[in-house]
Image 1 (cartoon, rainbow, N blue to C red):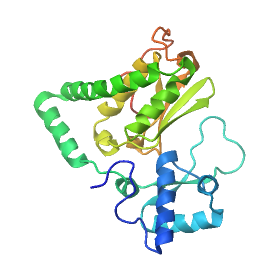
Image 2: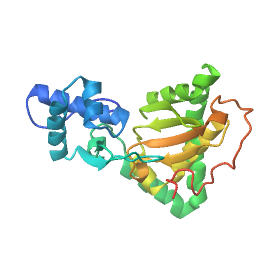
Image 3: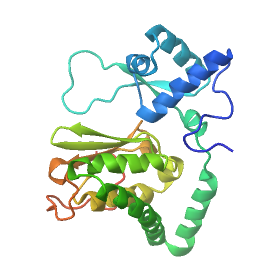
Image 4: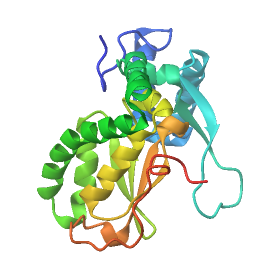
Length: 250
């Protein structure tokens, strides 16, 4: 059985033992950091760009990674965006062992017999236990490091999360989602998670992208006014509605 965060039991691509090990490192780096350029991978892994391209070609042949046009938020600079490489569904499946089909069937049964409201209740109840752990981690951090503390707590749960500065706020990025395939069918899971982030950080947050909807990373924007994470922070906007909290903005 494969566990979240562990290397795949089967080798990701054919070749020598050294090549297979390096290709696993390339795939793992994309899992941890999201869609990446050849230059980014070469820098992180200490390889030449030519070597990275060779391993990416092999991984693409095995349907582990795929090239994409880099998404640009805000003003676009001159020239074409650099090509990035992202994990395919097959590539993600190599790193986790989840029971997506069973979970989706269970949620469909709940919907059919108890209505969509019951799925919302389940999603919120599921997130409550997680929220307690995250809150303890955040309370132990200084105000300016609470988002980073949340990212570390999420990483411990298999979300490979990072926090980074952004114009007028911060971005919380989850480079992996253990329930992405189920969330494709039941966005209530994403919506409950977004509501949890808002409550923990004491401010309205906005989901910019989700893995469940085809993006390479789940990205949540946190305005600077709520960066301290204080529960007394005044909300400046209406909390995200259940119909949009887990989805990409139009």
